[in-house]
Structures are given as C-alpha cells and as structure tokens.
Length: 281
Length: 235
Image 1: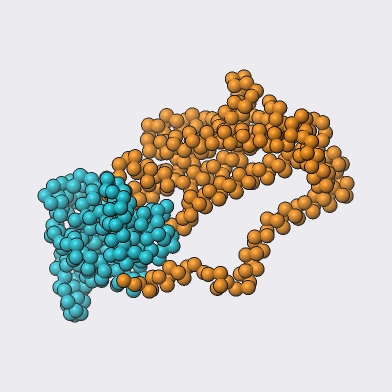
Image 2: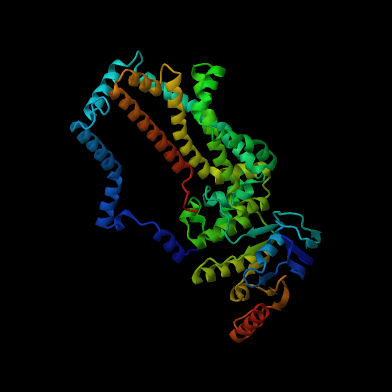
C-alpha cells in the first residue's frame, strides 16, 4: 500500500542541503561562527582597554600577560600544585557531588510527583533548604565533615539536589495525561508506567535541571575551595589574589568558564542523543 | 456494549443524567454532538478511565470497572510516545505482556503493514505526517487485539484527502477484524461516511436526541436526508 500524499508531506518538512539557497548557506555559516566572533570581540576590547592603561596592570592584566601566566602555571605549577592537579581536584568534586545529586534527586522527584504523602513530607524541607546560600553551609560542612574532600562533595550535593528534585518532579507532573491513559489501556502497572511513560516524558525537564544545576555546582565549589582547600581552581584563585597575581586569577576564572561550558556542551550532547524529539512531538 | 441509565457529574455539574443505549457486536456506531457537550467524557466512561456517578456500562454483560485491553482506544491527541520509534510505539502494548520478543515484533510489524507503514518501522514519530501518526496510533491499538475500538475524533486533525483514505481503510479493518467500533465525533459527514448507526447527543446535561441507522450505498439524496435529520437533532 502506498500513500504518496502523506509521504510527500513528511519528506517536504525536511529540506535537503541541495535545496538550500546561497543566502541560506551563508546565514548558517554566519550563525556557526557567531560565538567565535563574540569571544574575539571581547578579547579585542580587553586588549584595547589594557593597552590604554585605563586600569593598572594589577587590576586588569593584558590578555598577553594572562596567556603568559597560564603557560607558566601549566608548565611549572602554582603554589606547589600543577595546573592539572587543580583542575582535576575541582572536576572530581563537581563530578562526585553532582552525580550523587542526580542519582538521588531524580528518583526522589519522581516519587514526590507520584505520591501526595511523599510530596507533603519532603516539600517543606526542600523549600526550607533551597534559598539558603551555599556560603552559609560551608562552616557547618567543615565542622561536620572536615576540610577534606567529603565536605565539598556534600556541599555540591546539598546545593544542587533541590534543583534536580524540582525539575524531575515538575517533569513527572507534566506528563501528558492521555499517555498515561493509553498505557493503562495496555495494562501497564505503576512500575511500568513509571519506567516506560513517566520517566521518558520527564527527561526534558530533568536535563533542564541538570543544566541549571551544573552552574550552581561550580558556584558552590569555588566558594568552598576559597574557604577551605589546598587544591582546586577556587583555592588557586584565592591564593593568587592574596599574592596580587591577577594574571593567575584570570587564568583560574577563564578555566572555570571553559570547563563549565564544556560540561554544559556535554549535557546538551547527551540531551540531543537521548531526547531527539524534544520540542518536536 | 450497553450503557444503562448512565449519569456522570464533574465538579457537581451533571454532564449526563440518564444515558442508555446498546451497541451491537461487530457494528460501527458513531456518537455525534456539538463541541463541549461531553463526547470525550462519554468515551472516557466507555473506556473505563472514568466511573459513572450513576448507572453502569456493561461489556459482554459485565460491568466495566477500569481500562482494559479488550477496549482499544485511539484518543484525539493520539498520545504517541515520541521517545520510541514507530515499531516501539506499536509494540508498546505487547511489551506490557509476557509475549516472546520475536512474536511481539512479528505482530507489531503485521499491524504496521496493515496500516501501510511497514517501511516506516524505524522512523521517529516526529518525522511522520499527521495521517501517518494517526495510523501508528491505530496500529498500536489494534496490535493488542481489542474486541471494541473506541475512537475519539479520529479524523478531525487530518486534511480532507487523508481523512477520506483513512476512513475507508479503517472501515475495511473494522469489517475484516469484526470489531465493535464506536467513533466519537462532531462531524455528521464523517459519522455518516463510516458508521452503521449514528447516535446524536445534545443538551446540558447531554441526552440522546436521536438514533439513526445509516443506509449503505451511494444514494446521495438519502445520505443528505440523514445528514439533515442528524443536524436537526444536534443543532
């Protein structure tokens, strides 16, 4: 059986590359290069402002000075630790704390969405802890868990889990009711509903939570490393600031931005692979 | 399938008060009424998603107590699962059973072939046209082997050509599989084109205003007369 009308309509929605006009191609190329253009423009502005000596080099080192400092700490280290040690320490803390928050937060969010009792039990705690700034936790974390890794893991966990829970819960609550109805017709039990309908439906919002959460995780981590840590990018920035090595401070800030952006891109890539239908169906 | 003095209230507002009708096995009945009258609510009652506040609905003599595989439902928004491909959607109902995997796939493919989508088994849902999605929803429902097929505005979102092709195919499937089909629609033409019988509901609370056996054949004058009669019931 053939349905030429429908096939044509389905195919018509996907324009092939051959059908794109020269204007379309140049527009796509322009859009693709936009991030590089913006970054280049910012660096150029920075360069001009530092060259004009509007601020002292201590307040605003030139891009060349920052690259030079970056090269020095990448080859010889800083304050007794190599750059990789500092990056590795920060990334490890983020990875452990944030993944733990996802592993616990997603099931808790789904559970809260499916049970009024669980929602009523957890929601007041969630709303109580959510607005507390991470800096307020740090002294308590150090007293309870020491100045080692554990206090940083737990701080990132505590600061990011509300975001993960709220997004997972919201995703599960926003499941199209008719999808649940249809699954019920097919005889799906509660467990099957959760696994085959609710969890996949909630994935777009869970990923949104992860993307917001990763930014919050970096904020908490750097704050924690500035207060109680020997290694990590936050500790490196604080030490460099105390020694008036502004170039190293800039290296730290830029590295945090780049690593945070790479993590965001990783989450986006996984999201595209796992949820190709997002925004389309 | 029998509706016996069915009443239903939503937020203390009566939607139906005393709805009674019987749908013969193997027949195609359409329930026609204006928008907002409670047609979808009636389908939800027939499917077992909702319970009547009075009266009862019987399937083969037994009261309906909840949704079940004997009553397949194609809802207005189709409720397809975009995270699954076409084959995954059609075999979804079979995945809820203990059927061996190769049997599930064979049955799902047979149903996809029946609706003309065998070549699209591995396509994503968002790559399909509206008519193709409608076919996927139909194949998914038929794959579980229901005795009764409940259709909620099954053709309303389609263009005229697709609607015409799909209604002919659906009628043919209905006859081949000896299904009892109930179509909920606001379109009199659509109901007359495919049904053996049209039940018209109207009013607040909704009640049956007329019940008509549709003559089969190409007599346009007769069909126009049926159309006018149903229109007079629901206008």
